[in-house]
Image (tube, rainbow, N blue to C red; front, top):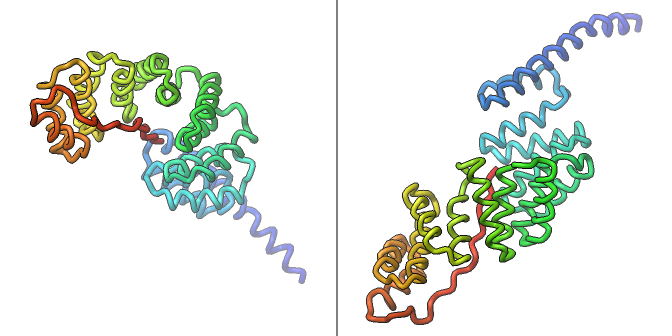
Length: 291
């Protein structure tokens, strides 16, 4: 019985050293993560957790690393552990909401962002993620309110400006939406889908020549919207009574598998018709949100 206190005293320096070692690894892991050196960040955070399974922020950081690497399941596993460790970390719920949004779990995403906002109402990322969830859940009015709050907290947030422009387009506020998307592109030219969204809004606002220019940029880039860009550029030419140019694009879209373009090619381009009989009505495009 007398040996137990001595054993505990002998262990204390070891425990203290392990905790210190874990904190050193965490600092290195965060630095590597900030510079996007994910391989080094993973090695360092794993070392930190090996030294001390309860090191503050360990599971949260490892989840963030896995999310950035595309291992969403692994990230969720770590976020569950992180929540048990510290349920008051607002940033944890912001990070986890991004995965739920990406995977289409809107209710779960809303629960996470609401927790984040309850813990910290001044985090613009929480409001942005809430806007994304509302947008994907077809609550455009709610998304717009969230984006206004996000931009109040972080003016010049390119992603928020872009999404606000898209949402305004959904609400038929095309001119204001165009201005937002143009501002977003000026700040961050590489936003996925931004050129296509701008082009579609210009088309819907009947600014056909400007829309043709933007669709041309999408086509030149050969991005994921290539087929739709040909279809919509054709529609611009059609609105300008240029059947030859319109059909040139519709034929390309048809060759790429667009069903509406096939119908138009068959019933308009390959005929003497001056107008498209029973012209297909395209639904409004919904943008892709990436984190």
